[in-house]
Length: 178
Image 1 (cartoon, rainbow, N blue to C red):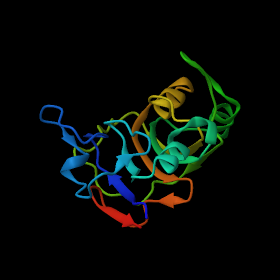
Image 2: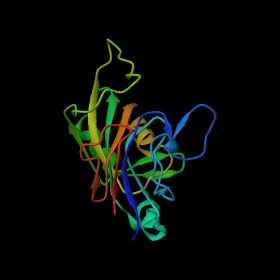
Image 3: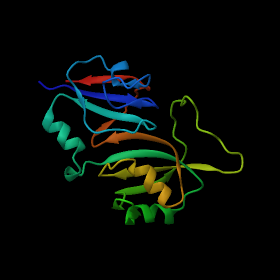
């Protein structure tokens, strides 16, 4: 029987088990042996990661050809409009080609855990939240897409991968699903 772990990756944790100097890694949180990340999440991003010992499932989650939707909540600098969301769905030009969201919507500030350290707040520049669903997963894709529509990402939290969600996991917690 294969193992599947739903993990809430904290901010500034590397998506690998091997040590990298004094930065935290998955081994600081995951005690289950012989599981591997199915995809990655940037060092500066938070939220849902799936780990498994099932190679086929790992490929289904991480390989772009399977088009598994990944849902992100992005706190952006500025005030997004429906036009911005439409542009993200239509597609924006990045250095490595066009990228488009499956969906985008403006959301109210989600009820999330405090981030440590917190994001830098600027008195004269508002921030807002959008929900983006993508089915690729290129390097820093969501951050580059929001920057392309002049809405730099301040905080990025992945809340779902396909059918899996964070449920009620706090940062650093995981559930083992057998």
